[in-house]
Amino acid sequence: MTPSFPTAWLKGDPRALAFLPDRFRHRAARAEAAAAAGARSIPPALLDIIAAQNARLAPSPARLRHLEELSRPGTIAVVTGQQMGLFLGPLYTLYKAAAAIADAKALREETGRPCVPVFWLQTEDHDLPEVDHCFVASPRGACCRVSLDIADAAASRAPVAHQRLGPGVTQALEALRAELNAEPRAAEHLELLERAYRPDATLSEAFTQVLASIFAEEGLVFIDPRDARIAPFAAPIHRLALQDAEAISGKLSRHVDALTQAGFTVQVHIRPGSPLSFYSPDGLDGARYRLDPAGPGTWSLVGHPAGAQVTTDALLRALEHEPLRFTTSALLRPLLQDTLLPTAAYVGGPGEISYFAQLPPLYEHAGRPMPLVVPRARFRVVDDRARRLLNKLDLTPDEVNEPREALLARLATRNEAEPFESADMLEARLFRTFLTELEPLGEAMLKLDPQLLDALKRTRGTVRTALSRLVGRYGRALALRDTVAAERLDRLRALLVPDGAPQERIHGMSYYACRFGTREFTRKVLDACVPFSGDLQDLTP
Image (cartoon, rainbow, N blue to C red; front, side):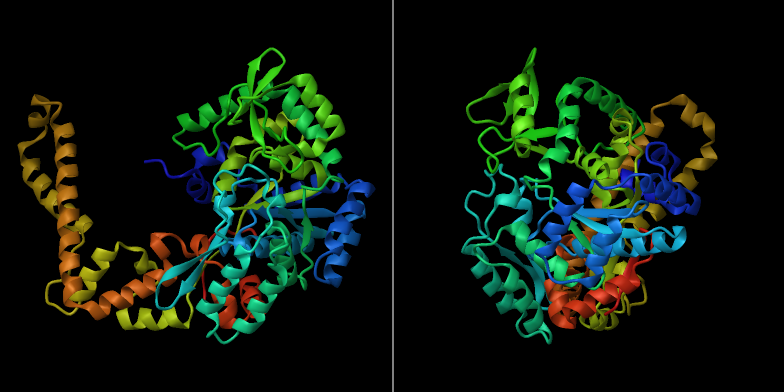
C-alpha cells in the first residue's frame, strides 16, 4: 500500500520526491533558494501597510528590527500560516510559528542574509466550524471541548476575518477557567486570553494579538491579506487565475493524474476550467463562492442559493474597483504569498505539503520559482502527569499508540507465564505454520490451481478479522478484571493520543501554558526545534 504523500515525502520515497523534491534537507539547495528570494523585494507601499498592521500588536523591538530589515534589498523570509483557531487552535499552530522562527534563524546563519520569520494569517478562509472551538487536555480523562457556539457557523461562507466573537466567547473563557483555574500558572495565561478574546473583537484579531504576544521576543511578523490596502497588490494574481483558468486547471489536472497514478491521494480536487479564486458577490464581507464555467464569458457561483451567475467582464470590473471581493483558495494562497514576499521557505504541515505537491504547474505558469517546502516541527508533550502514568503502566510513549484492547490485554497478562500475543502475532504464527506444511507439496500444487494464491489471501483476511475480534473481546474481558489499569491507560491515552489522534492535532496550548507558564512552555518548544527537520520529538516540560 502506498503511504500518504507527506509520509512518503518525509521518508524520502522517490515516488514522492518526483513531485516535490526535498530541497530543504540540502544546504546547497537552501542557499540557492535564499539567493532567488533575495533577488526580490517588497514594494515600499506594501511594506508600509505591513508595518501599520504590526503596529497594532504587542510591542516588540525584535519585530520592529525585522520590519526594518524587510525594507532592505536582499532580505528574505521564512513564511508559515494557519487558520484562526479559537484560543490559537491545536498545538501545531504554536509549533509552526516556532519552526518558522528556528528555520529563519538557521537560514540567516547559513547564508549571511537577513532572514525574517513571517506568519501569514489565513483570514480569507470561511470554514468557521473548523476554527470556532478548541480542545483542552484534562488529567482526569477525555479532553474538554470549548466552543463559541455560533448558531449559523456551518452555513457561513464569509471569510473568518469578519467574524465577531460575540457573547459566546465569554462563556468559552468561563469554561476554560473552570477547567484550568487550578493549574499553577493559569492566571497569567487566562488573563492574556481575556485581554484579546473580547465579544467585540474578531476571531482573527484575538488570534493575532495572542500569538504576537507569545512571540514578541522573537519578532514574528504578521500579515493579514484581508485588508483593503493589500487587495490591489493581490489583484494581478486573481486576474491571472481568472483569465488563464482553463490553461491552469488543465495543467493542474494532468499533474494530479500523475500523482494518482503514482498511488497518492490528492489533497485538493481540480475543477475543470475553474479559477482558483473565490468571489463575494454580495459585498466585501459577504459570502464567498467558487466559480464554475457556465458558458462563454459566464460563470456560475457554486453553492449560491439563487444559482447566480456572473460574467467575466463583471468580474474584471470588480477586480479593478473592489479587489477585496476576491479571495484565494488553498492552492492559490501560496502563489500570492510568494508574489508579495521574498519567500525562501514555507513551513507547512502534512496538508500543506500535499498542496505543494500539486502546485509546480501553477508556479511554472506564473513564472515564479517555488520556495523550499519545510515540514513543521512535530512534538509530543510528555509532562509529569503522563510520565507518572507511563511508569505505573511500564509503557513507553510509542507503545501508547497501539490499540487500547491490545494494550489492556498485554498489561493484564504481563506477569503471567504465557505472554499475550496480538492479532498480528497470532496471525503470523498461524500462517507460518500453515505455509510450512504447504511447502512440501511443492509448486506443482499451485500450478494445478492458479487461483489458490487468491483464495489463500482471502482466507488470511477472514482469519485476521476473526483474530482481531477475538483479541478485542479478550482485551475487554481483561479490562473488566483490572479496572485500575484500564482507568490509568485511558487517562494516559487522553494525554498522549486523544481520540487516537496525534496530540498536536487535538489539544490546544492552554492546558500546557496554564500548567507550565505561557512563555516557559513556548521557550521549551523553541529550544527543541531542530531546523529543517520534520521528525517527531518528545517534549518534557
